[in-house]
Amino acid sequence: MSDIALQFPALSRRLDVIDRKILTVLQENASLSVAEIGERVGLSSTPCWKRIQRLEADGVILKRVALVEQNKVGLGISVFVSVESSDHSEAWLRAFSETVSAMPEVMEFYRMAGDIDYMLRVVVTDMQAYDAFYKQLISAVPLKNVSSRFAMEKIKSITALPVPPEAAE
Image (cartoon, rainbow, N blue to C red; front, side, top):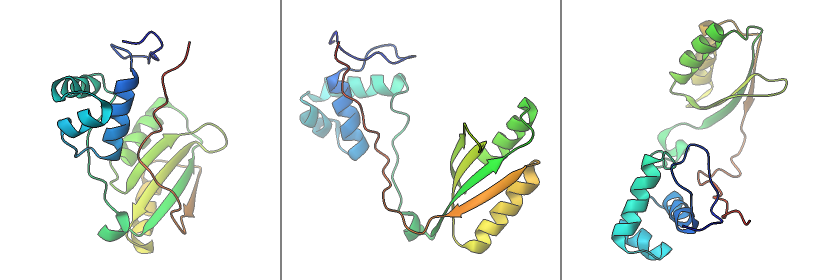
């Protein structure tokens, strides 16, 4: 293992250049065989497979999924929902988090710093579906303010993280 590998918190080992290449390849196409991944990163199948298993065990690779085009499954509207709360208690946050996390329309859910407390990315079929979602959201727990911003066009949307190179010492 390289002395200049970057150490991440909660990892049992360092991510070296090969691990980073594996992560980049898998983010591009997780359906490749281990042999194909190994060929692309310069390893034979067994060491490549062991590294992938270790990356999964360490929680670096969370899961492998198929990406679906939302418009082709009838989810034509993307909404960014800003939420402000006047209650910042642990009980309120727990109730709000459980409610929002259980809503299948919510693709992403963040607690924010600044003038907005929470941000959600929501996908729905149409305006009526969003109205139903909105009514469910505002009835779940007391909210101070909810603002919705509708996406007109998706210009860039990627899932692959820009895996940083190893840190130089």
